[in-house]
Length: 457
Ligand SMILES: *Cc1c(COP(=O)(O)O)cnc(C)c1O
Image (tube, rainbow, N blue to C red; front, side, top):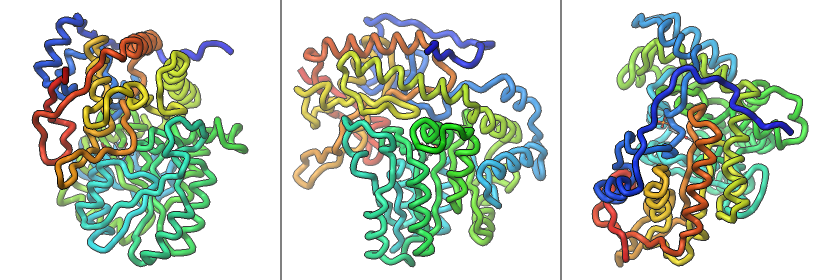
């Protein structure tokens, strides 16, 4: 098999500012050992997130110039609406400034006290918006998705049996909608199979509960189905995506992911009454229904991005380049969540640093070392992000301590990734020298963004 090359040429470049290990040591100390507080200019390879960090194409930039900025009825809206309708089959399309705005509007209408929203795994903003409405967010991740070392094709799947017994227990009337997140971001970027989406829909239909897709990474999920699910090898990613959406009654989308733009999102659905209420809220909080918190140029770029993301050469390169990073780390013995996800590789910090207990934040220790050693910015997804305190002040840790290396779309080349591999392996070789951290300052909510740390000796 020949090397899978980047399916693009580079026309516009952005220089990387180089720093020495010595400089990074003091930059990190000044940032209180929290990479969220490091300036982007002091980062060599930024793997903090794949959200809004993608490189747009020449055609998307051309769309930025062509955007129709009319207040009402802009041409760009109709191109955007046509593209989303053709892809999702939904009757009503509502643009929002990003994914969480679509969530806020939807859950303000269907959520509320006494309601339950099931999901394979809620993304953090989705959970926050469900809970803000007064409803309860409940996850039904399949058993194999809970084990980082288990190799399986569709670890993002919904546990349908558990979901059905939950519905029987709580009553369908208290469950206004059920979500499936594709790919399962919080579960490691793992895909959901077509069979699982179809079977979830069939079961929900018996109870009259609508199915929504949190579709941020729908194209990556479609390509995993093509690669892994019998019967889909000869179907195009677009046909597969259309079939995925055909089982849904609604969609929330962050365009900052698989629409390959820096800002944007939408809510699309078939229920006319919810759509009418959503448009009313949209006008109050986002903008007029034909722009909804975005500029006309953003709508052009999203429409173009939604077409480009389904290109088979793009998806082959995308999924393969993330797997390339994951497989090289596995070959070197670095413990990662297997198999690699669609948008990120997750280092298993518990196995990477067995001598650092969860209450000394092993993930944060790896994150700091990757920054000092190689200028790579990653993010801890473990006790820093999700840790809670018991009444006696002791830390309650989540089951996994992970470090996420998220890959922005079309931004880094293979040599950048080879460099990342070298730095992680180097860190792994010196892992016995890594020490834990203590938190010296934290905010009451979402503490990982602003926390300060102290290195333990
Ligand atoms: C990013 C993301 C969201 C929220 O979208 P924003 O554009 O960041 O508001 C919701 N769900 C999933 C799965 C995501 O990855």
